[in-house]
Amino acid sequence: MDTQTIVILDFGSQYTQLIARRIREQNVFSVVLPCTAPLAEIQALNPLGIVLSGGPSSVYDADAPAADPALLKLGVPTLGICYGLHFIVHHLGGKVRSGAKREYGHAEVTIEDSATLLFAGLPPTLQVWMSHGDEAEELPAGFHRIAISANALAGIEDAERRIWAVQFHPEVHHTPLGPQLIRNFVFNICGAAGDWTPAHFIQTTVEGIRAKVGVGHVICGLSGGVDSSVAAVLVHKAIGSQLTCIFVNNGVLRKNEFQSVQKNLREKLGLNIVAVDASERFLSKLAGVTDPETKRKRIGAEFIAVFDDEATRIAKQTGGVDWLVQGTLYPDVIESSSVKGPSQTIKSHHNVGGLPLGMKLKLIEPLRDLFKDEVRRIGRDLGMPEDVLGRQPFPGPGLAVRILGEVTPERVALLQEADEIVVAEIKAAGLYAEIWQSFAVLLPVMTVGVMGDQRTYAYTCAVRAVHSEDGMTADWTPLPYEVLKRISSRIVNEVRGINRVVYDITSKPPGTIEWE
Image (cartoon, rainbow, N blue to C red; front, side, top):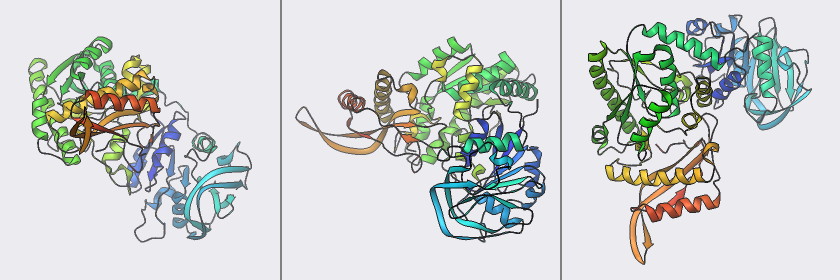
């Protein structure tokens, strides 16, 4: 069964991933490529439609991000958004200039051509979100204006060439009727079937894994989290006993997690799990390391070394192991690689940017194109229990990226105790399922305190809790005062070595969810 695909070319917009999500919400698959992607790579996907994202640059700048203008001649339905509109106008013979009045924020748009397919079913005026300093002064031949705002042209089309563009951002929540506009493009213009469902994904993925693996044997790096658990169940559905899951204690797991995860996944998912306690190996690699990227890459390299050792052992029993399954998600790929085109790499993830070049095993990453909420929907269709699917995300490098500075056994033990208290109190308050992530961070900051009339000099612990849809953006959660009070009181009283607790009220952006 072929998957219909909408290709999104990224010109550096902070909203590019929202475009992908809004399209996927219509049960239509979308993929983000850098704007510099070769035309052949775009055509190889046989796109049903193309979206040109916004971006911070001016299209007439010498160093402006540029796609191959030939994509505008493919005859594939194309929608330009903000910078995408400027790209279309500029490369098809029109003129873009710096606007007399810039528009940032809420604006009202008047639809001038109600017959256009892009605005079908929408009212004559729209509340939208603008973010631009340039405007189209002259339109290319064949185009006409279909919408206008108080300060600038807001929409254009050339139906014969199957190209539409808007100056505002329909993908953001600040454009309330934006989802209808995107639906119009996806269904009325591109003719999508809207059949990219969990059942469709499971069927095509299972078929693809079977064809790729054949009679070979596969190992899966299992963490106990949602991503790797769903990946393991999906691969197990495809190849059954040809899969062996390896759960590694990397020395930076949460308290008692090495034992509890094994029990949970064996009993509830029926997976064949081999547990490896490699904590001393990992902690020795982390000794003296304080740089976050070095931590991530050393952990990634050591994971692969452990998997290679286990693969060698399993190969003697099975006749060979060629494949490694990982629960890599789309946000991991985006933040670790150049998928974002002109945008910057944020950090490497141990299962993407941290993998060594000489790795012996070939990768199977069945969830690589999915966001977290999509993974949970896949898991539910696979019949997985909610207590597995409802777990909050936990980073692959574990507590190593929540211990700022050097990772030592003593500091790991401190954070394990503090983190257990944070999670326990949030669960007790009935808030765990409502929060994307909640955890403790151990800071390399010692402060003076007073306990039992005696001076203390101990570590500071930060508490972090955020709301998010997919981890790409996040808002800090205003935990109830009483919950914060209990967390602080328990940590200071129960965790010897921590005498101060602070609460992180930074959103993403400008921060990231994890501190490292």
